[in-house]
Length: 143
Image (cartoon, rainbow, N blue to C red; front, side, top):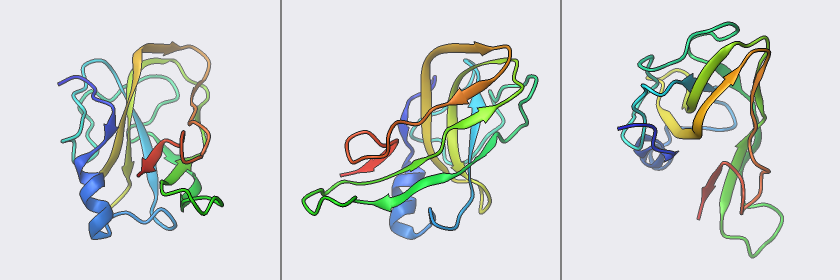
């Protein structure tokens, strides 16, 4: 299985069991190359296929939750959403294909897999930019 973008099964079941708390848990984003096999059944952070290179440390960057789970100000909105601040590696010299967002600690359960659509090479810095936090575009939406 190559990189299959989307929320993981661990995240979906973990929401119902209380595994994830976006107000207090630490979340990370790790980067992967084209040899990684990540998708819905990836249950925990793995080093298999994780990139190496200048400016990158195994396990990736710590993410900042920019919007904790909300439905926003619109009382008719039925979609819950949350988001993270952009994550930057600087300096950076590496090539990556995608990323894994996971909770740090407690077995490192996964949240979602991101597929960048192709190899992304950098020689100075690298930034993962998250979409605007709204009910129609946030990185994580639950309808």
